[in-house]
Length: 157
Image 1 (cartoon, rainbow, N blue to C red):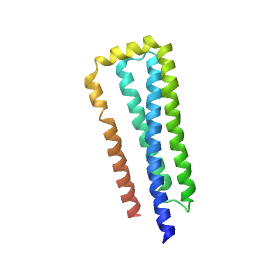
Image 2: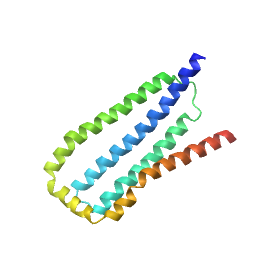
Image 3: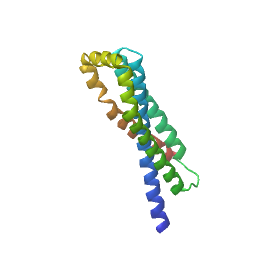
Image 4: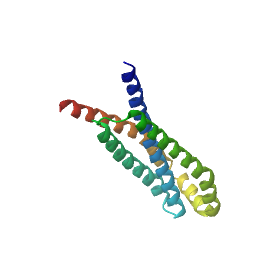
């Protein structure tokens, strides 16, 4: 009985940390890509949309891959997988912190005119920004649909 409870907690932790790791990785990718577009003086509309679209596509790919990988897992050491995912999650968080703390300051200092252009361009796109605000909701909806369809397909087999 104790073994099943421990495995359940580990499996729950695997799901939680895998999901949060994917979200944080995609958020980092969005942030890095947005800064790259800003310093290359891309159009402000493209800077608003493109990182979000790439973020969404990478999120879907990673979620589908992760679910396919663990939908019918062979015997795995749940403790080892959980420990690895916790390490990956905190590694991503630390990299995000370091980039925002050191990298953003450096980029804004070195490319201040590019960031000023971006800020001026964004001021004219409030409607577009409101549409982009729905993308995180869309991510959760896609995640729910993927989970439900994979579960239904797995039950039919």
